Image (cartoon, rainbow, N blue to C red; front, side):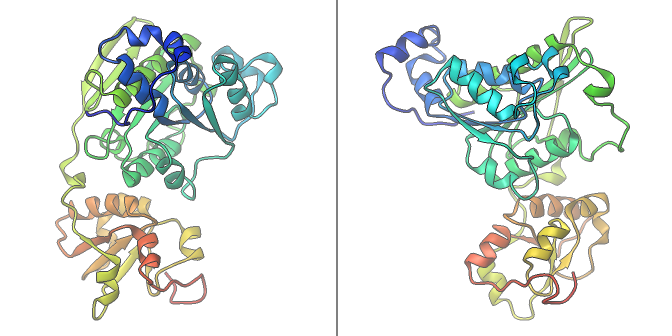
Length: 361
């Protein structure tokens, strides 16, 4: 892959000294270091994976690091979450993280997002960064990260740990994504959490170090990224093995049929519009006459869409693209999705209604 970031200003003498070991690496060198300093990386979670990842990202000279976490430091975190100390117990993790990174390098900009990643904020948060490193510990958050990155056109590095095992991969909207690896979430309660099954602290460090290495490679264009490959770590056997990952052809985004907001507005006898957002989003602002069928329901049963021409839409186009991929896989040819989603619709002057103002959806 080409470098994700253009190089920033020339290095200062102090920066040359700090990053001298990077400058000795031909694959990174001064140009690569300037890219790192100009980069913006969003880290989801300041826990077991996020803690060591944040430290090494800051040490590598990532100029702007965003941290998303709504949790506070607990005593049980300290066994593996090396970013935090005993004195931080009870503090917001984003605050503890920001202080720790400032001690490491006060020149690094740390943006604190003391909030939980959700459907309401994921796309906007991701769009403000060049790359996402996900260290979250729930399937719900991982799907959110994936969908937001697809919508924003951002690659992301994924890591996961449990007990003595770890997984790492790189996903990209143009290549394999998390939904190609796990098309649907596992049944609730079928996969234990670290709080239920435990995790070895060193495994978090091992997986995080690989994730940071992949992030640096993506930002600078060095080496071959883990795109299309999943690295699996077994700490008890001390092995690393590689599994190939290919995009599901039904999920190919490049050739998805779309309609622009202007075209939809001008369409005589407007086709049925299906909103694949969440109910609270639909209640707040909806295209008049649109029918609500959340993305999860479409993915679970793509055949549930009504017959006849249909236009799918979401907030910005990412979720509707995923829904469309699933629907096209059933053989339908009369379904498209709204390019740019509701945002493009309103910018084009399209009307919206709030809950209760229009036909039920």
